[in-house]
Image (cartoon, rainbow, N blue to C red; front, side, top):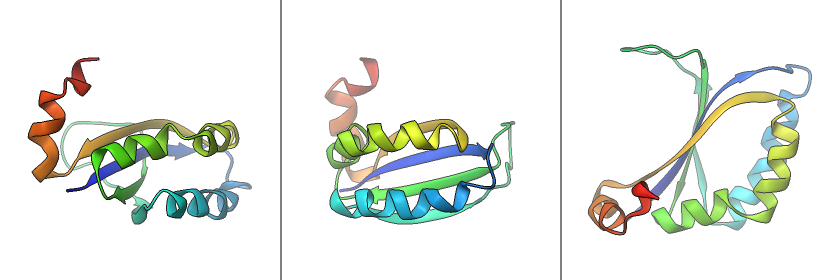
Length: 108
């Protein structure tokens, strides 16, 4: 089982972007997460204005949601909103998808 948090974003303050990783990594690790992707991205189909992506993997969908809603992340978002703009999503790993869908999480 796994859960993932994905951030699609543009950098709005290049002078401070290097601060974001060192601030976020201890929080990710505290919640048992692993940085999977941190890279510019190229859209292959459709369109988006966002040019960068970060993906974190957690042991479960619930762990990913707990991480994202943690007090530490709420505080970090105050800083990151000054440095990047974009959106975040949470998805379950394939083996957990059915139980997450049945839980009604996506209809709340």
